[in-house]
Image (cartoon, rainbow, N blue to C red; front, side):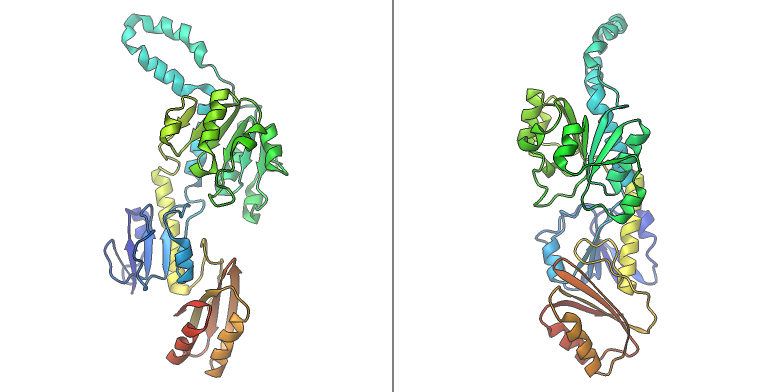
Length: 387
């Protein structure tokens, strides 16, 4: 029986996938095998030693202590693409909001609501103040071509826009999905200099934090419009506001409001609604649950943010799972200990990702408890599990 602790309200569509004869689920659960979470902050939380995996029903994992989990051999999953369509739709809406001054017009309309019979005439006189350009024929620069970026690029092509994409690390799957009409930018500066609109679709890390700053903005067209529904920290807010005030930027649409941005009349702040659809919540929950189940039951890893993708079809009765630091001779030490106990390996796979590696080893014999104890003592091994 596997025990899964749920720290947030998770879509029933996902929870229903857990077989009740194999899984126990609750928000308060001692010694869980896994944690299923949405927005709960796990930084500083006491994560039990029994936890083997944490699944985030969403793409961002800023609420999870990744480094600590890696060191303890806890596999952290997210659900990339589960909310992609929801975010994509809001990006398209944001492109329109950045162009047509729809919000300004609506707010002005509310201000004349008490004018009674004068309203039609006032509307005709005042509407010119809210004129804005069409998207068709304009250039959209998409920075980051993951699941969401690809969908935005493809839909912008369908709207008649010219699209330039930048992503030096684009995956094979994303490349297959991307419209052949999307042009490739060799540099960010090249994309910025040609784009009327810029949409950001990047993870937040040390190399991307504050990347849209005064220097980058100088390379943009005068009157460019930026849409950021990815992460607020991708931009230097002070530089964005200064560029809006000077007229260098015509608009900034973000899903991450701050007090400073809310005071800026040329910024449109959406209250973090990118993934706020019932469909996205269902999709993410289903993905998270399926990934947890496959890991707990077979040891296979898909969509982990801290350990490599690793899958092996099981053809032997016993399976050994080892997570370790990515240092030399780890596989040799593992196989030597198994051979010393006369355990025959029928299949083995080892993948690594940055500082950590993961091994799936199928054997004909049960691995003796003494060998498991020896494996746990090997310097560099952070987690040992058998199935």
